[in-house]
Image (cartoon, rainbow, N blue to C red; front, side):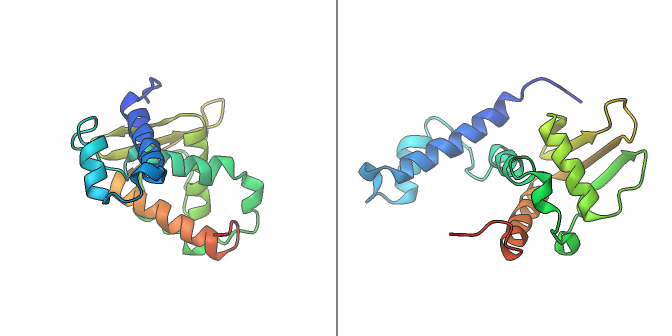
Length: 162
C-alpha cells in the first residue's frame, strides 16, 4: 500500500471546508448556490464535486476513529450492509459487518488505504503482519455505506441530531 500522502484527497477535503465557509458567510446569504459555485469555486476547482473522496475520508474518521470503539459496544450492526466490500485477501474470514467496520477503522486510523480509479483499497493487519486483510469498495458505494452508517448511528442514538 502506498504510504505517501494523497494530495488530491487533501485538496478535496479543503474544497468541502471552503465551500461550507462560503455558504455560511453573510455576504453570500442571498446568492443562489449555482451562482456562488460559478463565482468562487469553479475557477479554482474546475470539474470538482463537493461530495468527494476527501469528505468520505473525513466522515469515516469522525465515525470510526473520533467516536471511540467503546462507544459502539452495544451498537447493533445487523442493519449495516457490507456486501459491497470485496475481500481481495484475508488471513481469517471476516463475515460480519462489525468485523469489516473494525477493519475500516484500523485501516483509516493507520493511513493504510489508497484511492485509485474511484476504488478505495483498505489494508489492515496486526503489528507483526498477521491477521492480514485487503479489501476494496467503489467510492460511490462507500459514500452510500457511510450515509447508511450515519443513519444507523442516529437511529441507535449513538449521536443525536440536536
